[in-house]
Image (cartoon, rainbow, N blue to C red):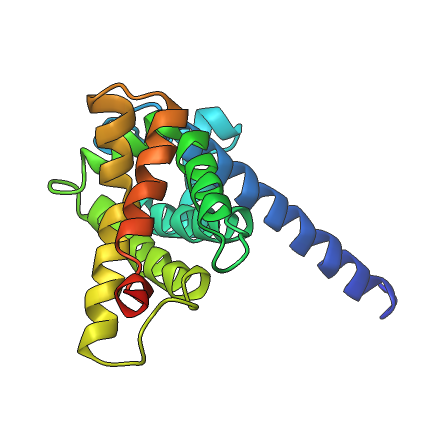
Length: 200
């Protein structure tokens, strides 16, 4: 008969093994989706990349959409960790943001191109926008007006200036160097600082 002391240990070991498998599958899926269209990547492709069976993926995530949701949450957590910037320091804020955008440059371009036709991509984008807006409220807290319409207006301006679409325009469409693109973003952020009008 199995002792009571061994059962919790075996359950803990099993839980840890399941978490390792989940992480391996999410990393495999993320790696594939960074290089290929979402629709072109099948569960079999992900299973082969992760070294597991398709059934294992289904057991853990329920299917492709469930896996995509889990990957999106993981990426969001990693993004939050990577975007540590001192509030009010425009140069540092821009540098941190560009480091994040550049880290997955091609994947960002690929995913933005799919937002209008792939529902899960649209969901991921909506979550990313909400996360980005919350980040803007934190790092630009020193310049935002009190809650109300004016605050929303100023937040909208900051969101537009720091959005991934503008980064894509500068870096990919116009071919600006990272130095020039960062300078452009810093200049725009300085120009929309609502406190400047109060100093005049």
